[in-house]
Image (cartoon, rainbow, N blue to C red; front, side):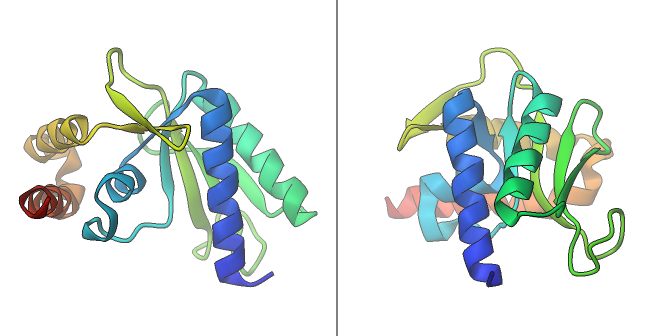
Amino acid sequence: MGRLRANAMTRQIVLAQAKKNNSIIFGGQAIRKHIGFFGRPTMDFDVLSTRPKRSARQLEKKLDKIAQQDVYFTKPALHPGTTKVMNKGRDMRQGTRDDIGIADYSKPRKGIKSKRINGVRYVNLSETIKDKRKAIADKQFAFRKEKDLEDIRRIKRFRRFR
């Protein structure tokens, strides 16, 4: 299966599961859904789920079933409470450099605002900006400061053109 077709199929599966489980898409995919080409390109998904570990395993199993082989795996992320769904990459070995991140599942905080688009919930842009500003101020997230600043700039640019 071609890489582009596999990515499109993976995207459909992640979104269908989010819709079914009433999960919320956030991060780069949510920004891109709200602002289109103004958003930075991103391949992986960030998903808020009341049961992140279970949702990650559910996605892993669905993707393996479609691939008709054991191509995906889950693992805990660096951030406590987050579970990653990963593709084993070309070498088909788990835990190597060529592994590809598919989705990160985390537990949502209370009162998160979202908007339903085509039946899938996406976090509101106002929530995204608030979270990104908070992360920028936190030294623990210094490694992603430039990416967060870029996302905020892109959202502001979009709002000016709207």
